[in-house]
Length: 203
Image 1: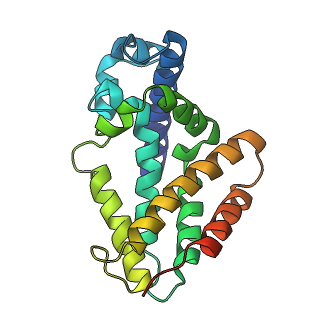
Image 2 (image 1 turned 180 degrees about the vertical axis):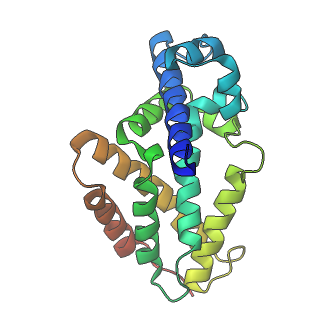
């Protein structure tokens, strides 16, 4: 089996486990009554396989958000120094939304789930050994914005404000995409244009 095929199967299995976790939590009215065994059974796999993909039960509920954030941070870090910051953000968002983990219906279901269980996203480490933490990804993205704008990431609030606004924009775009379908570029263009026109750097 080629590397590409193995990776595709790995992503499909992980997403199946995530969907199973969200479905079971929604049916049960919360994550507390959901077990790893039940998640694995719903996804058609085993408890052992579950722990090959996730460090904890809670991680299965939020892993797609981590993956989309990781894709965004990595794509933003790769943009050229002289690219306008909002065009770089636009390209990175589109890159993140083009990944299998950015399934709009799954993201919408996770967002709906988190409205009733918000503590999970704040207390759960979704990454596995060898992967950057959510905090490290956040810092990577903030440093990229600072680099693109020539600002100090620790002394100038522009990079932090821009990153937080971009995270909100990504969630809004994903919800709109789930609700109306179509090309994700349309939704990304809309939210990025709004942010670009409303948030400007201070010098």
